[in-house]
Length: 347
Ligand code: IPM
Ligand code: MN
Image (cartoon, rainbow, N blue to C red; front, side, top):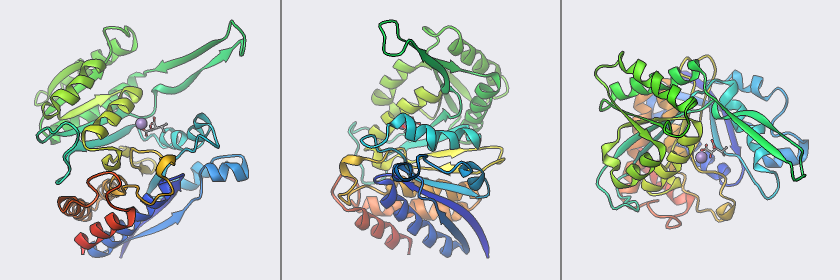
């Protein structure tokens, strides 16, 4: 029987329970489709940091490299470890080291979920650049703690980085409804964002079947609220994509529904699948975290592994559960109840 090696990193807070839920559903889907998932759990988290002084061992990246994919829950517990330490010690280095340059985040309403817009149907695929841009980590501080203190954080946009994320977006648009929205702020940021627009225009010539529209990030934020049905594929830089995908999560009913995949399209290293939401310290011990975002992310993992039938079965099971009103509103059902409903639909 075909088997895939999956690294599980539940991380912090609700990352644990939602990863457990996703893992149970994925295991069941795998059995149903005639393959198996072999999981190895890594306890890397803020707890781990407090015990060892690092978020993951020095050879953590090399350990993960041997897996077919990574399923991650959430990283961060700011009351105990500063976010800048925990995220730069675990999540962000994985995205960069494994060249997971495409962060894919689908935003659409599941059956039974109304969402705050009370809008009609929409189906947006946000594609966020995931390895450079505003998250490059280039910069520094001088004259710390004095009146002359200076902080510099430089965005880095490389030709290679911008081209590959836009090309990925064009390919997705071609597979979907043929529309690509490229998001910049080239009216204000005259170097990096004008460069991005130029690359978009140049690549567009290779995709005459794709309709391209350039939006400024502020206008896109408004459009996602006012006319989400007008959007198909949306490509944005790292930080812009980060912000737009929380907005995407909001219009689809909340962070509990927002799935994401950190993809290495060249398959030179494992890809990582994680819900958009964080560790949610405020509800972490209440047992009410919605596991749907994590389960949906798991379906994206199955798709990436080359198991589209199992992925489709998981999505259908999620939709069957929400269509019955299970997990459609925050706190209405417990994590275990939602998981049970998805498992039942899968059976
Ligand atoms: C996300 C998160 C992360 C990001 C944080 C936790 C660093 O907000 O995956 O969207 O900004 O990428
Ligand atoms: Mn985010």
